[in-house]
Amino acid sequence: MTARKIIIDTDPGQDDAVAILLALASPEDIDVLGITAVAGNVPLSLTSKNARIVCELAGKPDTLVFAGCDRPLGRKLVTAEHVHGQTGLNGPVLPDPVMPLQEQHAVDFIIDTLRAHDAGTVTLCPLGPLTNIAMAFEKAPDIIEKVQEIVLMGGAYFEVGNITPAAEFNIYVDPQAAHIVFSSGAPIVVMPLDVTHKALVTKPRNDAFRAIGSAVGTAVAEMTDFFERFDKEKYGSNGAPLHDPCVTAYLIRPDLFTGRHINVEIETHSELTLGMTVADWWRVTDRPPNALFMGDIDADGFFALLTERLSRL
Ligand SMILES: [Ca+2]
Image (cartoon, rainbow, N blue to C red; front, top):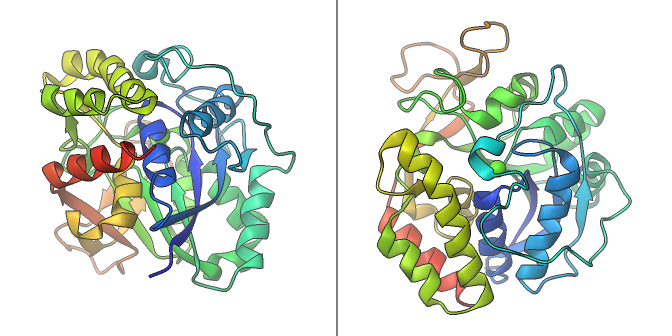
């Protein structure tokens, strides 16, 4: 089988960093055509820098990194320094990147890449707010039918919300963009909080990262340590959820996840529930399915895969 061609759209973020590292560690499964940064966890100047820090940590400074939209389509940017720290990558001390940021705008890179490839051969992997993807779809609607699949981290059903009582962060930051993507007709796979809250970095799993004994293993252990402080306080859980790597793990081992093909709509108006992913998990409407909405993960299998792959870098 040839490696799956992907574009990672991201707002790093410690968990984004681990998702990127997993992809870059798996060239036989995943061919990273480019990484597009978007404003989200922290502002764009930091996410576009952090993406390059992570590529250099992986020893892949030739990876193409593009800066995209610096704010959501129709509202003010909401960030999450309270979770990720001031830089977005708090935890390890990592050097500033030397590799350049590409000059092309991320949205144009997404458009050009989909146009240049055969239909059904490029997968989009959004790990942050969906602004860049929605902007590309609005600017060049012809690319929508060329998308093989969109595998994204965002939303929630049973776990409901983490940034408001009703909404998950990525969708809440740019609900308008999420609405455009979910109504685009492109095949979508969703990794919601329902899944990612089961991918907990417990002490033994953190120790396994550290035991890799490499710069990558140590950095990932320190990132997940930092993350943990916040999540333990908030959820009283045994460790921090590792959200975004669920996306890149799915590309390698889809069998680790189970879900339902259902209708998912995005709340774009209500002040109270803005950004809620209204997922018809129980299939109580006639609205047609538009997403494979995941509900469960083999967490031990996921962490075994992650540790094995990260040890290659
Ligand atoms: Ca993210």
